[in-house]
Length: 56
Image (tube, rainbow, N blue to C red; front, side):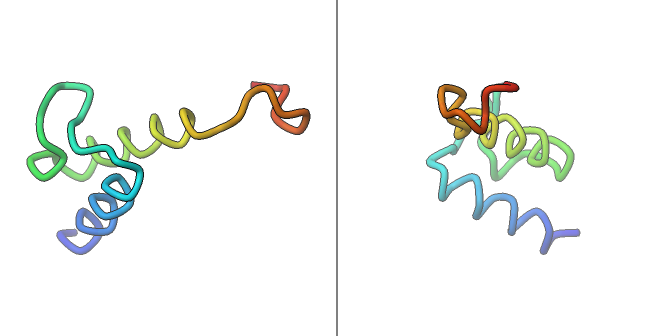
């Protein structure tokens, strides 16, 4: 499980996310919180104005 957490932390840090929505450091979050933060970050990365993404 620690290995999965490390992968999520690495992905979040690549997206320049170092704090969770709750204000905690991503290093202090559990696996479920990290998954949630990654989903939020991926939605922020989607370009809603692009034609293929109009359904957003």
